[in-house]
Image 1 (cartoon, rainbow, N blue to C red):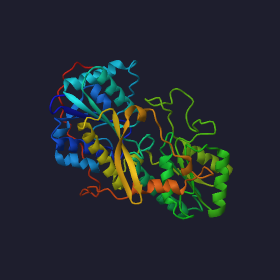
Image 2 (cartoon, rainbow, N blue to C red):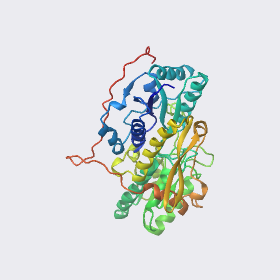
Image 3 (tube, rainbow, N blue to C red):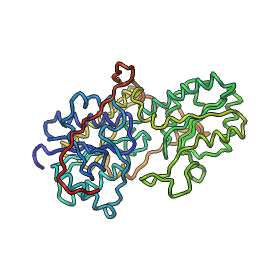
Length: 421
């Protein structure tokens, strides 16, 4: 490998509050090392590589790079572009290597979830087969917290903090108006794993506190049991606050809300979810005869920089920083993981997992974190998530009283190859 080869960093999938903190860790550590040439950004993830839409991150203002820690979403630009197997998408993978070769890129840092780790793994393998020197390191990113081989994922602590507080706030509203707005539902993200919904259990400090019922995709859901649960809470408290994960499944493992058409899928082939709150509301109003309303934080829950967890920001940065350190030590084909060394006091370090293993794995909420009735969480779940929401990440407030977020200048790097897409 040539001295001071260039590195590329790309972000993929739904952004998080702290994915930019990971990018900051990569960029600053790469520059600090003095062993890497340019840090090149891929505009809008792997699509930016395929289209050769690249920009010079090292040319950005150092203050803007530092401010990534205080800026939500994906400053490099993200995408949802599914690369299939090497056999079916070989042209795409070869194009990626061609772009890397053209721009002297020999370090590839990719922040994303399962599908991103799969892409990184296949690029890494094709590079090895082609005798092209490439160091590939994945950086965990997902609010769903469902990546295997890591104790938790950067992005989860902040969404946990946000949704738990949202349940507290909306719960107090329901308590104040329970004579008219008797039941409230908070629908949160979580396709196959209920980690986000489970985190709202932090808000339930006393019997009075919301949420009173929590439903996760891991526990089979039935409307009959819902009605029984709501009636019981209503009998005790005179009001009900429910948290529901968007990916609730019935006893057969089928999504409660998924449309039974081929059109109802995203670009990755995943079922389009949403609407569970409306369904629960309709059933409760019909069967229990109490007024019900619902809230959907939507993408706010994954971009709430104003209430991010300081622990999450720091760990996301650490993952990016360690990705570079591992790469410079010659490590490749791995994803940086978070390793919880102790809970009291909380201490977390990093480790490594094979990209292929992460791509094919999935971490769901374990049964011991869910109560026996399947409508709440246990103390073990709360012990797991509590350290992850600690601390308030600093943000910059402008003269208008609102947060100040940066936007990269993205100084374009000239294309060297024919157009591809």
